[in-house]
Length: 160
Length: 102
Image 1 (cartoon, each protein chain N blue to C red):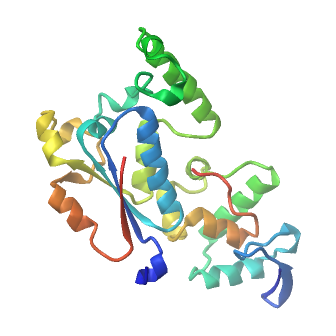
Image 2: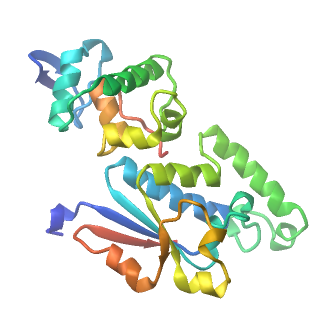
Image 3: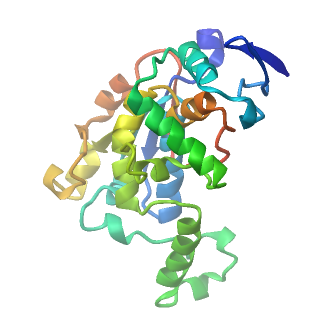
């Protein structure tokens, strides 16, 4: 821990899921880093890409199935409308805490200097193009490119 | 603990934030800004006045609120206070560090 006395200089946050609780966790961590004077970059891969996809990012949901912390039997969580209900409940609570919607949060992250990268492999797998994605996306990167971005002392990497 | 800033003895916490806003004055603000490598421009002062007013009105500060303040947008805010903008601005303003996560 001799490098910068273990101080964190840069956070590389990989988002691989698009259920709203995971997306917000990643966004809050990226924003929180910038607020502390730490650099932050995000890499959106696999389903995480939905948080960048123009037609999808405004309609992300809470996962009500396979989420034990919802304290809801899986059968009930799977009923029609359950995800929408849980999502609107959660959004109401988040609004009270002054949490922005996904698109506004992306705008805040960009304005704060967070770099947003989409994973090339996942983009190809889902047949997405850069034009399908959030307008201020910094680019589409390979894993190797992303590691290159992470270079330097005091960089930490986080997978969500 | 006590600290002398701009020839005035004030109470600060372990992170250097003033614990009593009544002890703050502009010279103290300028001195803390200098410690953070910031030379205060009129725009900085607009932001400092804004955060002080929000504090007086007991409104919790968030980055989103700063962006909607009409005083600065978020990009400008980071340009004015590059390293940890809300932490630095509140420290210069003599008010507590915001306790929230956003």
